[in-house]
Amino acid sequence: MATAPPAAPTDAAPAPGGKKSRKKLIIIVGVVVVLLLSLGGGGALLYMKKKKAADEAELGSEPESAEVKVAKRDPKVKPAFAALEPFTVNLADRDADRYAQIHLSLELREEKAAELIKSFMPVIRNNVLMVLSHKTSAELLEKDGKLKLSAEIRKEIARALGLEFIEEDQPASAPKGKAKPAPEEVSPVIGVHFSNFIIQ
Image (cartoon, rainbow, N blue to C red; front, top):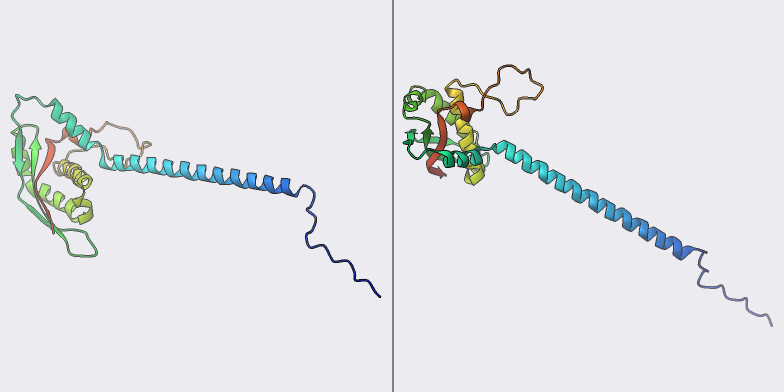
């Protein structure tokens, strides 16, 4: 009677050093994952800082400078204002027809500046309308959007009055001649105040 051949072993013998190589692989993978997470977090933080700096540069220092100017105002000097006729303008929204109705007043350095503003009123209104017509309702509904609009209106009024000032996007390598002041330093308008702001 023939004897049956011995059964083949079901479990292969572990290769020498198999457990150690598996541990090393897990450690290496873990280190790589930690490094990738660190780099990703650092990149996200750097992006957020750059975005914040760009947003602040885009808004300029208008809100802070306005607060400083309010604090430095001489209480003995009577404030002067020039009210503009209301603006009604179609906004730049693409998904729907939206418009804004805005009433604003200009705060002036001195009372006699009102005559200057009055004589340039057609150009001032044109420049303000151009700024408003390029805005979307989403931009104007936010407080930051209104602050940015106020700064842009001040700049456009300075342009209307023929005042020269430093362009924010002018490269540092541009030829240096006579230094040009910022618009708020030369413009008779020190503030733009909204008395009515309706978006429909």
